[in-house]
Amino acid sequence: MPIQFGIDHLLQQSPDWKNKSIGFLTNQAATTSNGIPSRKVLIDNGFNIVQLFSPEHGLDATGTDGAKMNDGIDTLTELKVISLYGEKFKPSKEDLSQIDIMLFDIPDAGTRFYTYLWSMTYWIEAAAENQIPVYILDRPNPLGGMMTQAEGPLLDEALSSFIGRFNIPIKHQCTLGELALYFNKTQHWNANLHVITCNRWKREQLFYEWNLPWVKPSPALQNIEACILYPGLCFFEATNISVGRGTKYSFEWLGAHWLNLPAIAMVGQNLLRLEMKIETLTLKLPTTLGEEETKGFRIKIIDPTSYSAVMNGLLLLKLLKDLHPLDFKWMPYPTQANPTGENHLSLLLGIPNAELIFDLPLQAWLQQITKWLKISQWPQEINEFLLY
Image 1 (spheres, helix red, strand yellow):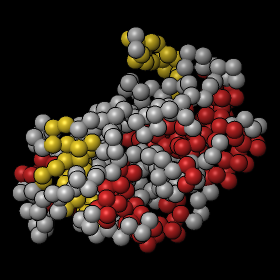
Image 2 (cartoon, one colour):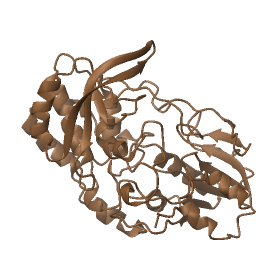
Image 3 (cartoon, rainbow, N blue to C red):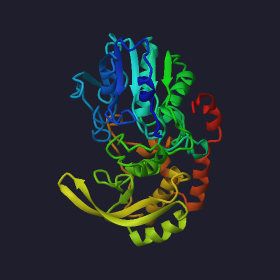
Image 4 (cartoon, rainbow, N blue to C red):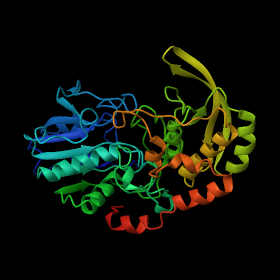
């Protein structure tokens, strides 16, 4: 039988707060297990939602990556929408002045630098500051929940940002509900926090075993394969190599007109043959002047249940940099949260001066990367907050 989300679980209840004034942080990707948008099904079932809030990519979950999202009106419910990826990340006291209950339901991608997680933390923090009960409608992690598949590096909190606010691994293997409980305690918010759990999910289950169709949580993660590759390929945002945004292979493909594809195939398959396959593929990338054909390669994962996304992404980054010393460049990646776009690799990795490590010879680089990836304390630290 299909997985049931927190929203499905809530609809089976009749909580005493359903008639109170509810503020709801959500987006179009948040649906019941049979595909009905959460905000619509709650209103249809008598929940008194009076105000909507939206994260990065907007309420419709189609906004450009990193682009400012404005306030608006939801065409589905005709409710006002306050953007929490515009002028602010946390709702103001005024935003919450008529709210009795704060509700959250957004699907996650299982990766530290995916921003919905951090919108949730600001939501809980605001609930604590304004003494409003907050309910998290939980969802399974599409990357599974086995701690043996968690991957670092951990975050140096001197690099705290909206793509990594607190110290957790890049691949954390938790649900957002579990992380909500963890941060509420470790950050000493002490919010009146409740997690409404999923049903029928086991930690060893990746999305493939949910028996449900994929719903894009944001424009670039168009399928589960992209979601699995994302924790490693996102590092290429800090370079002049494309990850295929705007095509049907976003976060499954890497390309640039100067890539030496035969050399990549030869060296890459030797380094990565146990984890992935590399297939040459030319794509038409969108540009400001139309489309531009760009050569590159698509990555196919051999075994999704054991794939080391972060390590393989870093290996690919090292490989492509070393094979193209004259063409490869580090690049800024401007977003609403980081307008200059500077220091993007370090913010993603959570490591100061991360670019410098890629100048090391391969063996010295591997030794340093191996130290970075060690997260032996994480399973013990998160264990008491695990719900499944």
